[in-house]
Structure formats: C-alpha cells, structure tokens
Length: 519
Ligand code: GLN
Image (cartoon, rainbow, N blue to C red; front, side, top):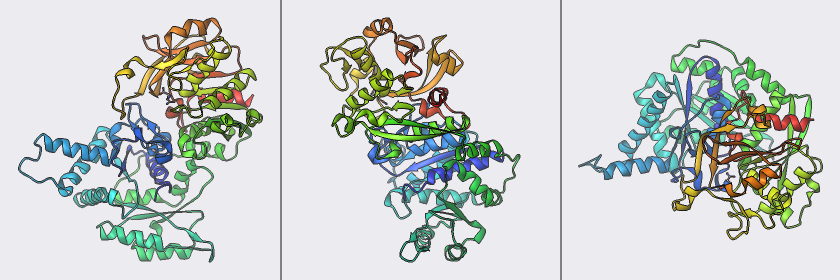
C-alpha cells in the first residue's frame, strides 16, 4: 500500500548494488492516468519532484536521486497516462493496422520495451522497477503482467521482490502475517512468485512470523527480510546489508561484485543518528500537516546536517493560521533560521510575507525558495522601497506595483500540463557575492518550476536600496538569486536547490544556510 516506503526500499537496494560496483537505474511505475503529477496538488500525491530534463514526477524519483546520486529523466517514471497516450497515438498513426489493440500483448509489450530502453539508455547493469500501488489494484495489474512476461523471457536475469506490511494487532500484541500471505497468493495467481519478501512494520519480525511467511509464501527463510521503522531512511541500505539481501540478488541474477564499500555512507548515517549539534529551523507553508509536501527540503536539511555534524529540528509553521490570527509570529522565537518554500496560489502568502519580514528585521538566517524568493522581494518592495501595495500578480492581478509578474512566455499558455518553466538551467553567479562564495563558482545548475518572475522594471529600485541579484539566467536579465549583504544570511532563489541535494553531495546553499543557523 502507498506510504509503506517502497521508494526507500528500491533506492536502498540500488545503493547496496552500487556499493558492489554495479551500475543501476530505477524505473517507477504509477498507475494513475495523469501523464505526470505536475497537475496534482500535494494533498493528492505529496511533493511534485522536478528532474533536470524538466519532468514533473513522483516523489520517489527524488528518493532515488538522493540515494543513488544520479540524474534521472522523464523516462524513469512510467505512468498509466504516458503509456496509454503512447498506445493511442501509435494506433492513430496506423501502427497496428489491421489489428485490434489489446492490453496483452500490445500495451504490455510497450511497457517491457520501455523498461529495456531505459536500461540501455543509462548503460545499466541492473534495472530496478518499482511498481506503485497495491497488488490486486486494477490500475497496476497490466504492469505486473508486463513484468511477468519480461521475467518469462529472461529467466536468469530477473527477480521479484515483494514489499509487504506486517501489522501488529494491539489487542493480542502479535505480528499478523495474514495480509502478507494473501498478498502473495494474489501475486502468485497473476503468475508471479516473489524471490524475496521485504517486511515493513514497526518492529523486526519474530522468528515465528518469519517462519510462517517463508512457509506460506513459498520462499526460503533467509529471503524474508526485515525492514522495521528506522531512525533515518538512509540507514535502510545498511539494514539490508546485514541480512545479506544483496547476496541473494547476486545469486539469483548470476552476477558478481567488483568492489565493496558502504563505508562513506555508513559514516554519514552515523552523523545523522548522533550529531554533536542541534538547530531549529522554521518552515512556513500551507500543507504543513502533510510533511510529504516538502520532503525534498526536509531531506536537503538532513544532507547538510550530516556534513556539519548537526541535527535540524523542523518547526512547521502554517501561514494561513498567521493570517487568520490563530498564531502570532512568536512561533518563530525559538527558530535559528527560517525557510519559506515554494507554493502556488494566494492562500497563505501574506502570512509568509510576515515571516519574511520577521527574519529580515531580526537578522535571522533566511532561505526563500521560488515563491519564497518572490515574496521576499514583495516584502522588500513594500517595506524598504516604500512601494505600497506591491505584490505578485499571482495574488493580486491589479496591484499598483507588480514587482513579481508572469514570465512573458507564460501569457500565451493555455494548457496546464508541463507548461511551466521547468527543469535544469544554468545560473550565472555574480562574483564577490555570498552565492559565489557558497557555490565556489560563477556557474551553477539548478532546477526550476515556476510561471512568475521578478519584474525587471523594478530591479534598479531594489538594487539602489541594497538588494543584490547575485544569480541571473545566463545571457539574460532574469533575476534568479537575491541576497541582502548586510544581513547574516538572507538568500532567495527562483529555483529549487532542494531538488539537487543528495546525502553524498549536499546543496551548497542549504549548507551555507545551516552554517549560519548554527552560529
Ligand atoms: N507560484 C509561483 C510561480 O509560479 C512559485 C512557484 C513555486 O514556488 N514553485 O512562479
């Protein structure tokens, strides 16, 4: 079922295989009929992750990138929408002339072809395919069928790993294996016998539960793997390593390792688990009840924390409550720094602006991401430049001072899907600025997802009042990083640095922000 952590399991298996010298590439299948999740809100599907090629995709791809430290592409996420669109377009072009187009074999063939193509595009030794959803769902059944066919054609080079939930029934205090047994039965009825069963739960499996699962699900006991809740998700590869999961995989796939080292990873996990220092960072937002909406920011803070021997406690601040007067800015009192993340729509914006003013005036480290930068500019315009009523036209289309306005090319956009300014772009960094110091370079590559930008007509006014635009689009007068030099740390970015942060390579802006918080 969703929320179980299949993405983390997949990423962790990948990490372990990587550590043995294999080149891995993940593919995620999502059964929904949307082409991508760019048009879904975070309540429906958690964070929308953005890849370098501009794909707006499932947040599991974020987990893969953070663990595996590789750049993925649009193709690494197959959705129901993408595969059906492909089939229907092909049918209209006459690709199946004379035939009736069927789920099996036409759709399933396209899926296996796609998976193989990703494998060869990435020149991978092993493709990890994660099937989203639950066994028995109508939505992923054709995908499981495609994987059955793939396995039939490639007996010695494919294997199946089932991820199940083993609940503990409170009244009897016992781990229940029935849901796993029935899920496996269902899978077997579809022609798939799992080679390994990974059991998620709050605790490790009891010896008895493990025996039962092995017996009823038709796998050897050593292939029943524990995956209890852990302190940090980054520990999961180590947990699997202890249970020899990767040996089982190598045996089944008939492959041999060329090296062995998870040492660096292990050191980072140690730092996450027992750091010497502690800071509290306030993150403002309007989906704060749903932590999945801001998962990349949360993880980016963990990454720079691991490299700075510091734990980051996050305080979620619901800005709609600040607007309604249900909360005061006192909530920021114990915060060592403030992050204002990206967002869409008017709701919560004024509350965010209040938080930004607090951080600016009280000299508290501030990082504004996308909408966070735009609102930092609105705040600066109103309070420092005296532009009364200044706003982004996203919130007030008739504002007297549209300091943030639609990108010119966005005025013509009618369709909603994949029409924002998306994906990785180079940013030109101005020498001698804080951004330059942090990146250690005059070029940075970061990922974007926006329709609005800082209005060029106001840039001179802002600069005269002390705001520095330290990052611009290459060869264009488009503002992409703003900073306040006489503040301890005050940076806004039109891009999302959280999307390029990985455990082994934290984003420099997050690290700089964290260091400022630690002071
Ligand atoms: N809503 C703003 C825009 O479209 C900010 C987007 C974001 O924060 N990702 O430009």
